Image: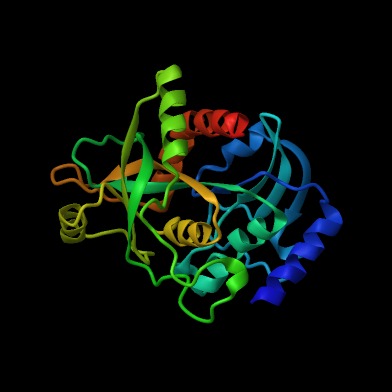
Length: 270
């Protein structure tokens, strides 16, 4: 695994020698942030050695290098999911690569279903904690180069970045929620009973990604921030049939607010 990552990093550095400060992972329907990037180089996943290939509609499959707000970044336009048949090692592979490229901050985004009755479709939820119902991505052989074998998870999402996001949202009159994100394997959406169960155990939103990336980031000492767009509701009386297409549509409408927050945050990190 370690040598595979180093091989991929060498390939990328030969084409993009500059060191990025932040990495960004763009989830379902959230690729619009790319329009805010001053792009220097794009690499398709298929041309990068050892890189998985995204198979989900709404995930374009490119690694983008450039600047936002004067900061050098690398952005994943399309992520990998356990439900696609990838191993957890493959799911977090790009985060490992971005760390070895030099990033210090990781920004994650996703589309999720709200189970908090106070949420509305189109809300933004800043992640303050999570509940992992996926296999832990750190299971398996341990490489000291990645960090400790037993990472502390008392603060999976950097509270200083959470505060910064709240500050930017307030400055721009953007309504944001803060909450706990729960990840399942998917690819089915949840039943009403599952929605009730997840709410009872403490979740505010449910999705199929993000947590493995955050765990890998925490192990490697990266400051991590994550935000969800609430694209549907798993609240009694508000549950409707959900499709991947409707999720994409809602995310596309709400992503302008998310894009503004992320762009401002990246510009202000020191």
